[in-house]
Length: 80
Figure 1 (cartoon, rainbow, N blue to C red):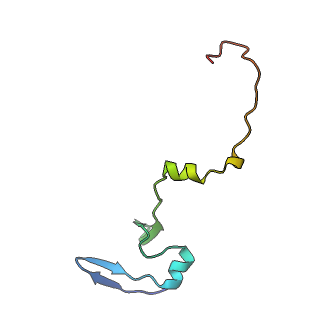
Figure 2: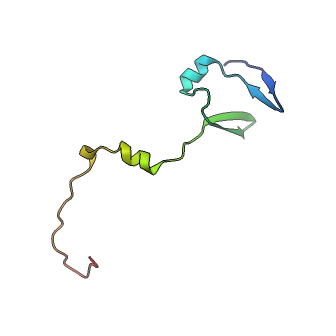
Figure 3: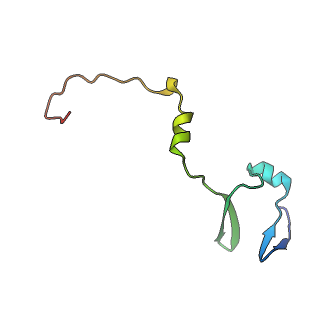
């Protein structure tokens, strides 16, 4: 456990997070975090980033797209 002091930062308060803790958590200066109060503890969690549809499509690999399967001719009252 690492002990740090709460400091004044303008009209707010702030905590400096030691470099080794940032590295272990994968966080960096400028990253967004969520603060919550749970069971008498202040908990800091990395903020979930909003999903960007364009970025998700760009990250897809064509070779990972499954092959289409032919299921045969319609046999009932399917609308297609």
